[in-house]
Image 1 (cartoon, rainbow, N blue to C red):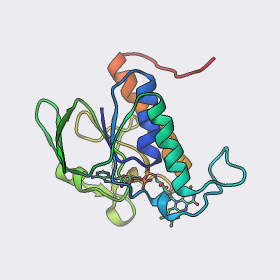
Image 2: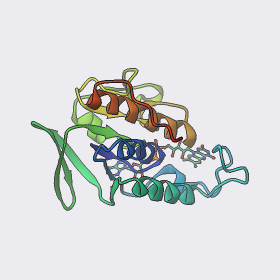
Image 3: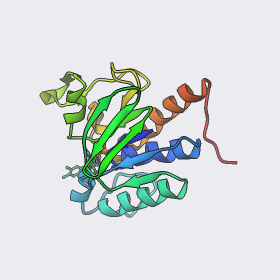
Image 4: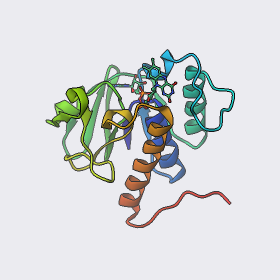
Length: 178
Ligand SMILES: Cc1cc2nc3c(=O)[nH]c(=O)nc-3n(C[C@H](O)[C@H](O)[C@H](O)COP(=O)(O)OP(=O)(O)OC[C@H]3O[C@@H](n4cnc5c(N)ncnc54)[C@H](O)[C@@H]3O)c2cc1C
């Protein structure tokens, strides 16, 4: 599973995928909107607020702790052959599924011929499981036009990851600790 974008949506998806033993790589070029926020006061669990950059750092550590691979690189393009072929500035990787969690960057979506919609025609349309009209190509977080709050994107990344896990496993999936 390749995830383009290591903001809260991509990292949350990677955490859930990794905990389900799905090999997950997150490509990120460190331009999350959260880097522009000195202190986030509406993210549940941080009653005194949390720095935007700190929230990303905690998310990176959390996803890595459960086995997600973080690749600090720019995804330049993606082609579809038997698999998704991900072209970065340092090489090419293959993935069975691709998740776009790239917020304002919609170049890859447009490269697949997806029409953008919503306010300002900036957002990728997805079905109730987070899949676009291209089989195996998913999107999560702000790129889908959800409200622009970090906790909403984090929740959406988790939700879409669970739908992908269910597709891979072919059944209902829960991630509960005891
Ligand atoms: C000024 C400002 C203030 C805000 N204040 C708040 C606030 O107080 N509270 C709140 O809840 N929300 C706030 N937000 C909104 C919040 O930042 C977003 O809702 C949230 O970051 C969206 O998460 P995301 O994971 O969808 O996208 P992002 O966090 O933006 O992450 C997208 C990531 O994808 C990466 N990426 C994109 N394309 C590629 C590519 N081709 N290759 C590699 N990497 C790529 C980017 O570098 C980026 O790291 C604020 C936003 C702004 C701009």
